[in-house]
Image (tube, rainbow, N blue to C red; front, side):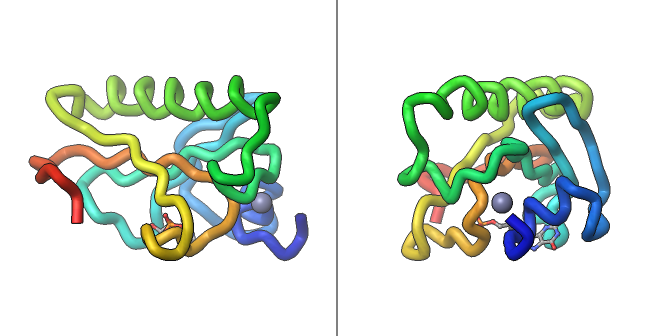
Amino acid sequence: MTNCLFCRIIAGDLPAKKVYEDEHTFAFEDIHPQAPTHVLVVPKKHIRGLKEASPEDAEVIGRCHLVAAQIARQRAVENGYRTVLNIGPGAGQSVFHLHVHLLGGRSLAWPPG
Ligand code: 5GP
Ligand code: ZN
């Protein structure tokens, strides 16, 4: 989707600090980090969000979480990190290409705001 910000980042049409890439997923540094580690992990397939995901998207959504866990291990933030999906504008979703936030490297309050 040429009008989707994250599809354009995946395609290399827009710059981003790439952290990881495989056949199904792509990970890059968030442009406005909310923690010392703030990486976005996205499926290469355009999925608008979790609400819009279909059963056949289950595997790639799981893969995104496992990629986040791998990055957390590499960054040594395994004492405590969070994987987050914001779903819908009311929860702060501002980019409509499904993405898992990986946040770590600081203490994280619960419940989130
Ligand atoms: P959301 O609010 O949809 O859950 O998360 C979108 C995230 O994308 C935000 O944390 C925001 O900082 C990040 N973001 C927005 N535009 C860009 C961009 O052009 N490049 C990168 N690397 N991150 C972006
Ligand atoms: Zn997209």
